[in-house]
Length: 397
Image 1 (tube, helix red, strand yellow):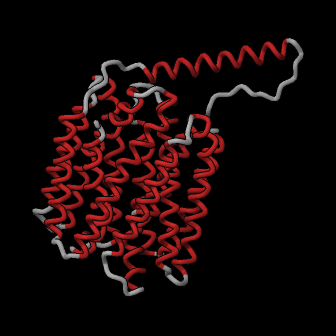
Image 2 (cartoon, one colour):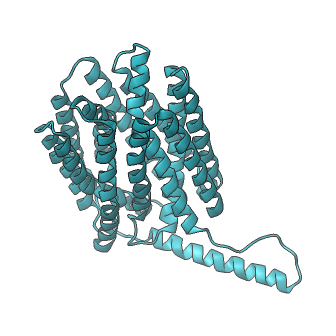
Image 3 (cartoon, rainbow, N blue to C red):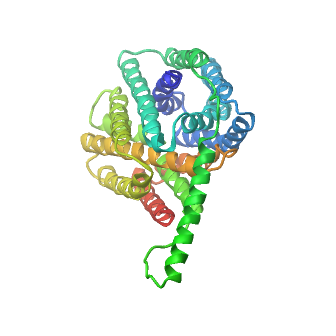
């Protein structure tokens, strides 16, 4: 039940994810403005992620930072309705990103500490699946708001109200864990296992027994590099995506609400991925399947090039977006679980920092590349970076 507030929060940001880029264009902004707004917000969120992760583990209080995030989002989204200046919107969005990210590290720690290591994949998958359903419902709300002509101000007020509901639900339902030790136990287990394997290999070598086993730890730097590259490619691809979908829908003489409908299907693919992963994952499966998922995303990004360059087929582009959503769900569950195993207490925000570094760069480069050179170059660049992430995760595993 403690996840209910996050469900409403994701409803608001699901609606906002497609509405906001289109809103910026409608108030005479440009793709460049969208890139600046998103990248500035994400760059500011990088040190904020590290701070919130450090302070929540330092104080061993998690609920208060979740409440700060939801309340700040409520207030700032209301302030969005008071101005149609692109500059003001960028400043407010940047301020919101600093406070909004406050709920991410505490949420990850709550899952890691409330459940044992063997249940982390299932727990993260259930959380992400539930909140993705919220995100999907937010997109459905956006579809109906667009179809029935709900004003932009009322749409923003709806986003603010949903965050207020998230705040109230979290006040009632979220509680700090009484004991915080699971991540420490996992760290000890990994050290003991490494020492045991070392002694076992030395004993075999001493007895003259040949073995092809190797003694090495996971390459944490390669894992971090893969996270940055994957988030860079994802942000580069998806930040201008609503504008791309809107352009091909317009070319096909489809109604404007179809943009939200397509992203509903993309989110539906992610929901399917989360619940598929929930009953099929463990720590070994995470390492084994991670590289396959990243390689699939690379392939799908390259597939989009043909549609951008030739027919602008809405249906086929939608199928690719559904598969991209499914693959992202698997990736997020695998990497969240592995990060809680690799990242020590006190640095819980490091996962969001690494993701933020890539997302910030991609959110600026994607729209600029689309505006100057065209969407074909966005897709090929994203595909190449996804492949580089695949190489990095291959080194890690």
